[in-house]
Image 1 (tube, helix red, strand yellow):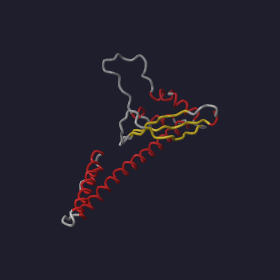
Image 2 (cartoon, rainbow, N blue to C red; image 1 turned 30 degrees about the horizontal axis):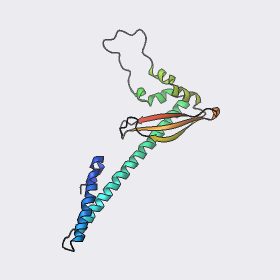
Image 3 (cartoon, helix red, strand yellow; image 1 turned 180 degrees about the vertical axis):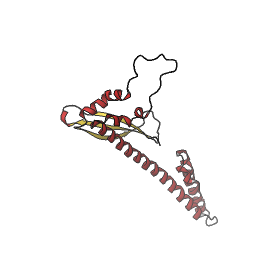
Image 4 (tube, one colour; image 1 turned 90 degrees about the vertical axis):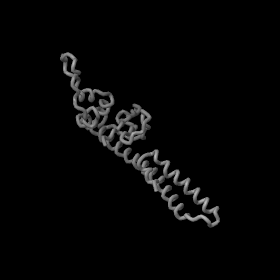
Length: 186
């Protein structure tokens, strides 16, 4: 009866696995008892519940991963389209730097003689952004594959994907690859 807890955390997958083992052992003992032991129906229900919980937890995880991948792909394509169409401010607003307020100078620092660098200007000057901005109108962006997390830690709100940018007007150039990381806020 505890098998559905496997939805709560991956470690709790041990509960339905143990339930399958206990149910199989109970069915074997009931079969070997020659009709003395009862409870075959309860053991079958326990086995069915355990198998269903394992299957549902595994498929839920796969579906959740696919949904996150599709969402990340759509956001990455939208981001690249904004850059290609010249809306660099809109593309910048989609980045983590674009969502952060400007940080104040440290309290003990002297008054700066020149203004701090503009994050939007730095964004415009980034080589990938500059390439997409100049080639975006005639370049094609193609999703290649999902990547394993670069830090090795699986995060249900973070997705890293590889995209290939091919420029039809510059057919002799090899395509460039982009690694885009999407971090969902919730």
